[in-house]
Each structure stands twice: as C-alpha cells, then as structure tokens.
Image 1: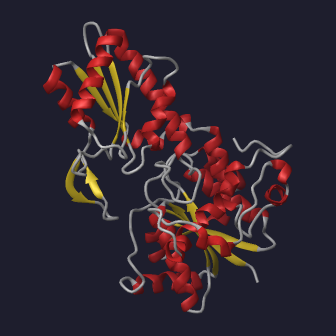
Image 2: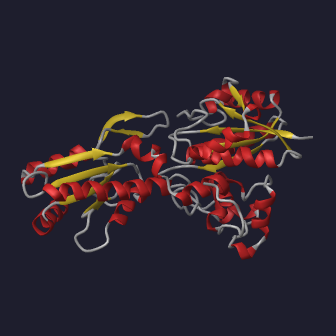
Image 3: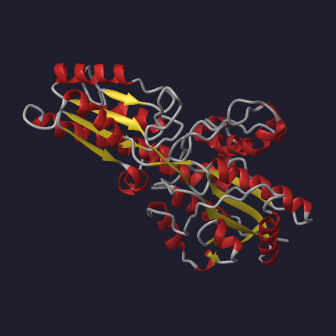
Length: 388
C-alpha cells in the first residue's frame, strides 16, 4: 500500500532550500505508483506538532516548479529543538500520532545537524511505537559545516554572494581611500566554521587584491598581529578590506561579539563582531572606517544563487533514498555519469562523529548526510534537462 511523505524545513533558510522542496515533491509525483501525497509541515516541526499540514497535491505542477526560483522558506521554518526522547517523550509521541493520522511512511527533515539528530530520534521512537517511518535528514546549511558531507546545499550561493560583495564594496572604498574611508569590514555568518569567510578570498586575483585580511573562527584572534596587517595594507595598497566571521574568538575562547544570551537551540547569541573589530582599528590608528553585516542578505539572496548549488539542491537529496525517478536511477547505476556508489548502511560505524570521535552513536545520527550527499560529485546526465 502506498504511503505518504511529510516534508518540513528547519532553522535558517538558504537561497536553495525551496529548490530541495521542489526536488522532493517532483520526484514523489514521478513515482506516483509507489508514493501517495506529499504533505509539508507549516513552520517546520511546529506545524507537525500542531497538525498544521499543507497538502501539496493541491498545487499545480507549475507552482511546484516555481519553488526552485523562490526565495525564503515556502512552507515556513522554525527554530525549535526537540530534546531527548526521555525529556520530550510526549512531543515525539504526538509526532507519531500525526504520522498515523495522515498515513506517513517517509519523513524528510530539511535542516542542519540538529535537524538530522531530530530525524534520527523520530525514527527510533516510531519503531518503538510500532509505526516505523523512514526518517531522512536532508542537508541544508549555509555554514557548510555538516559532518560527513563534502558540501551542503546553500553554501555555494552564499559563497558567491560574499565574494561578489567584498569585491564590489572594496572597489568602492579604493576609489575614495585617499580622502575618505581607509578600512572596510564585512561580517559574515559562520559560528564555528570559516567556509563563508574563506569564500571572500575568491574575490582576489593578484597580490594586493581584496580582501586583505580574513578572520576565521578556527583561528584565535590576536589583536597585535591583526593591527600590523591592517597598517601594512593601508600603507601599501591605500586601504584595507577585511572579511570577519561572526564566530571569531579571542585567546580565552570567548566570542568577540558574544552578548551573553542564548537562542532556541542553546547556541550563544552573537551581537555583531564587525563593530568590535572596527573600534579596535579606530582606537589604534584613527582611520576612517565603514563596516557592514551581511546577516540575512547573504542567506536570502536568491537573485545571485549559484547554479551548481541550485542543481544540487534539487537533485542531490535523493541519491541514498529508495524513492528515485527514472532519470535518477540511471545516474545511480551508471559510473559513466561520474556517480559514486553509496556505501552500504552497515558501514556507518566507520564514520566519525561531530568532533571526530568514532562510534555508532554519533555515526548513526550523521551517516545519512553522507549517504544522501554522494550525489554531489555526480556530473550532469547526457540529455538531462537543465533544472534552472
């Protein structure tokens, strides 16, 4: 008997999260002989708990196809972390009640590491309650920091946005540096991973090109060394352009921008590192400066999304899944297309956890990201239509 799919979005959106939703829905429709309806949780997991579901079968084909070009999170997202099964047992039981009521056989949770953990916990309790559901954590994060993945949908578009932005803003600063602004600082997202900050370096082509300094969360901020580099850039190039990750820390391990508050996932709330760094420069040299925070702009900029990112967002989610369209099956079977075969599920014990610790407990939570994301190295199939 055919089962239905339940799809939900979680956490901060990306420029291509709706492209992934498009891929899920279109693939399910292409497999109508095996899959029933696709429901979407309104505002993520909260919508499922409230039984506020969207029946996507009522939407026309053209509307679903338009998702690949749509910014934001079309079905709504949320920041709501389910605790352990013992602590939040009633909420997990409520999820299974909703699954039963709507005959859900597959749960796709489109988010980051916390969302993958939730999908794993839901799969555990669904088995305990005698209503097994295939729970699949679909990778999504602009930070590109999901373990056991080689890249994550959302990152490529943000990398493009940041590289273009720092290049254009730096040319603006350079134009008036002799009489006006000497230092420009762009703050980008990346609490613990510097992939987005590093992407700013794509703007540089030759010696002296911006950005002149990139500050990473993985590298301790040393003020004296930083100021020496600022002075060198101004004296040699006329100005200094800096990209700084929001998660930069000092030698004591403290975030430069920590406000002392926490978000819904328990993460430290950061108040903005760019003005902190700018004040360090001003107090030492007195240079005129400007700073900017890319903030939501970088993760919502669908108008400059990377085509590769969109392609992966649409097609990359389903390679480890049993639900595949005919075209994706062809890719799955053909080494000539550049596809790397997924490893058997029993191999998850060989994968490391979030901080490199091996073991089944962490690997089970995160292996699926690797399983789903094997498609990232798959070349375009001969004759396959351009997903746009």
